[in-house]
Image (cartoon, rainbow, N blue to C red; front, top):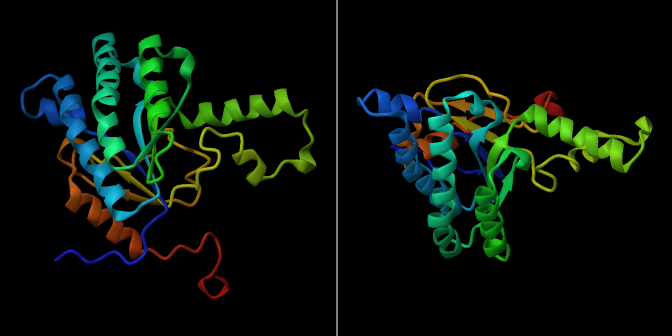
Length: 238
């Protein structure tokens, strides 16, 4: 019997891993796994919205993914474009606002147009905010923040605080993740939101992303509920 979650996180982020292994284990090409993973994206997004989780971040494509065979990266970019187009009506139906984070310079014009159209169409939605990371890395995010600070505000060390620095990150205005879920059994954060994950609760599941469904998400939320978050303090001082 699944235990009911009593305190939901404000922000959940997911590293969606295992598409390729899911396909290869079934004698299929890796790209089949990426396409199959779209159903898991839809279900996780709708589940989070129904639960009332304010922010959900999905790691869709990392900077390091460009190191894969071009046939796979081309297929992934094409899939991202199609997915944005096909899922925008679902986001409108569920009152979900969608934003994208990541380095736009390497992305094709068609990808950028689809992303911008989706952002514009969903901008007025007032429910959950879906943050999709495309061509993103945590190191890139920190570096771009430093560059913006140097360009816009000449260095003044005594005025720079973690709170101020956070306003220059790609996730400015978004609460830091309370819970990070990674599928496929890998136990690392793979250069995702390095600054933001400082005190995030980490949850690793062996379930491959295409098989990730509502009960798996619920299990992660229940694990989060059972954690004691002290943020470096002792329990008595909280």
